[in-house]
Length: 565
Ligand code: AMP
Image (cartoon, rainbow, N blue to C red):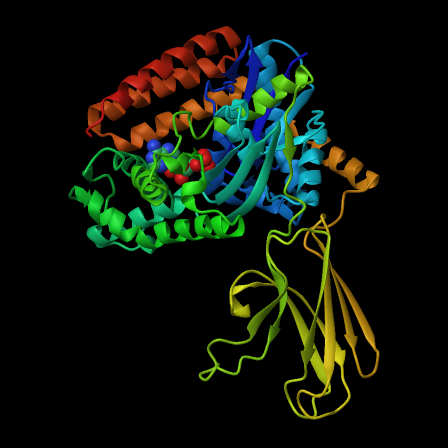
């Protein structure tokens, strides 16, 4: 029985298999390699996964969940009035991928290699394993995403030791990893990133430029027009990869003229984003104590690395062309499937996880004597610094800042900014101190951090010996057996739409969109074809529906090819 490789991504997921000595991507029920990681659950408990669910993101926002990977191991999400955990939603995506693979490969699939970000802590990894368990997939070990990308590029086959960087710019996240391959082991040396930076931000800049030229504001557009505009701009964004000037023909009621945007202008407006991209690259290099010239390779992962000006920037920074000859959207799934193939032959590569370093700095706030206008607030005083090997325990002494102070609030922060207001507050402990002059009372603050992402805070007021203790669980503990059962039960009530149903829904939505973009005679033709297709579906004859679907797909494709630009 085969083992498949799965990239369970924030925006898209993909799945591949190692067969006949090579990687084979597995198409989903719509014949596509990328399945949006979006889940829609209606009031009757019927689930839709992927593109059909994505279509409903705007129209049925409260019944649809996306980007839940961000919440792996944390909160619950509310969908259609019911609460679901990120592992439960991920399980829905995995189930859908598993089913697609079973149909494509013609055999039951019970095992997978699943990729996770290198910086996932133990709890987030456990949450991913739980998702697999809920989807009835056995996963012995997870693979780090940059490791998977490196394997896909065959870096593990090099005879000598190699150091390289993996840049992963997806829809909404940017991850940088510095890795080393040495004697059969791929090790992540440093990781940095920006959890809120990705292709979507570049799209938002283009939206700004468009609205400015069209003399419109976002509020003047209803959600449907906005969705259509985003779709047009997404196409335009891709055209900038090869065109100096991109035209967007009028399609909104409020816009009567064609809008043209120069690549140069677009890039200028993206400069702040490009700076934000440079920042984690430098951080990772500094943390790994490496110069750009010491890297043997730079690998690009994630759809947004297709942006030509991103590539140009990377080439300039490293004075070499990055490796990008594999599809950046599929490379992680490819690597995972190669690892799965090696695992089937008991030759899987060792992949050193990064749970043994703390991904963020942890510390407290101290009085800022230079905050003359009251704008800055407290300063951040790191206690455990980023990339410290964990488990780690560090102590710092603080003194009172005011005369006759009777209480001191010790705030606990995570982040890298000098000012606490820009970091994330994880908690606070108030301690009592005897009245004294400022600076005369000392408080020892000890932070202990472990691989599960649990932070223990021990505070001692030195003069009184009074102790305080706080446990900060950034991510709650592993699910107990009863919670696991509850998860299984919640999922047990949900039902997947029949596969054909999903394909039909996507086709109908595509036709509706096409109809909206055309006028007069073309509209009539589309409406006619749509009605015919609906009439066939009404009869519920699977063979007739299949034939009609193929014909309708062909019909729509012809229309879509007839583009103006
Ligand atoms: P991912 O999460 O890796 O699937 O990344 C999706 C992101 O990649 C989206 O923001 C897309 O706009 C972007 N993307 C995909 N293809 C291209 C392309 N040809 N040019 C520019 N951006 C792209």
